[in-house]
Image (tube, rainbow over all chains, first blue to last red; front, side, top):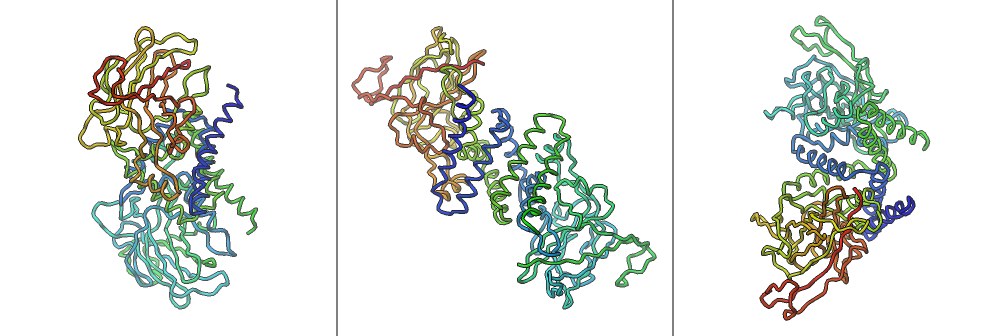
Length: 291
Length: 291
């Protein structure tokens, strides 16, 4: 058989599979499935995937599936570490004036976080250096957004989110609302670097390919307001040496912020007594795109 | 932002992810991961995947993972129904003279099947019309292959393989060896159509896209012999109306065989008494490619 005949057989198979989806009643689902088939087959044909590699792929996906439960979403980790999450965000969040850039959602957001007032503490006992965070929420015309809901969540200084502990604790997460002038402020903890969960198949993939599981230090935000584009993002810490090799490709220069270090004797912005601990502070002014 | 700037941002992200795998010590793993990233991102960018669709994708893969256990391999079903299994087989089994064509392995093969002698019955109690199968195994030079191991497995007339029952039965599967002249023969049951397991997420995908879960009637073979290419294939039943719409794209014209119907009074090839039942017979001459 010639090379051309082999290519024809392979192309004919792609076409048969694409055609099998031609009767999908929903036009968008038809588009998605047919495109997925074309790209999947293009991959298989380009790399000339062996049957042993196909089996390894099935075993890998099976392991990812079996690692996933209510507390651990290994498919999201896989999507994140392949940059697929970040690409989806990039596709869906084209720049809109000076609207704040989006980044990955990650697997650690939890619904129904505790509500705090301005100046409240999201740490709720999570270990770490206190960090004062303040800023405003505005729209792209510069108008303050009152009543915007700000969800914040972060890992503790040991590198774990509350949901990674088995004791059911709720720490390092909360939500609050902007005031009439669009302002917000809260105490959190200074972000520190941590690895994504890497004791599962995604961690094995990173190890096998010489990649680090470390995420650059960050604090998660989700900001929602009626009629405006929901923003899912992080802020990062200027000077963090992991900024260039973040394991989920989440870093954008515009999201890197100065975190100012303060000694234990520096007065806190709200007069809070930190019991003789050093602290940090940062500012994050959010601009929400049009809905 | 212009269209070009958006495209540049998306392409820059693809390149960052591809570059992150540049240090993979194994060259083949580097090639596979980098190609997977490029094709995955090309899909996301082409279809402009929404964040809600991304979430549906994560949920779908999670459901596939949770449906998979020791007895049910939903990822293989997914690969099969997307034609990925058949494409992998096509890539790896280019024609070699008149070597018998390969088709999908499927999820129902089991190691350590019972051994039978020539003329033995693989049904072992599985319900269905008796079917006499005979043939030879040769190499592409036409020489008989003695001692080739032939694994055969099939669904019963209710459409189920033994492993789909919860009672641990072993029916509808066996292995035997060719004699010195490369011949083999056994009793099985006449293949009947059945749906792939479609009570899980893959079945939901087929239903949502207007596809049938039915497989064309078939009997599985795996033939192995020292120094020759292992053949994984099926034979199909000429006249089966499902030949054109097989849910896993496994049908090849060269694998469609005549199954001759015999009345209860027709003498059987080996004199076996079928207790007054009608039966069928077919012939499948195998040619193994070079190893």
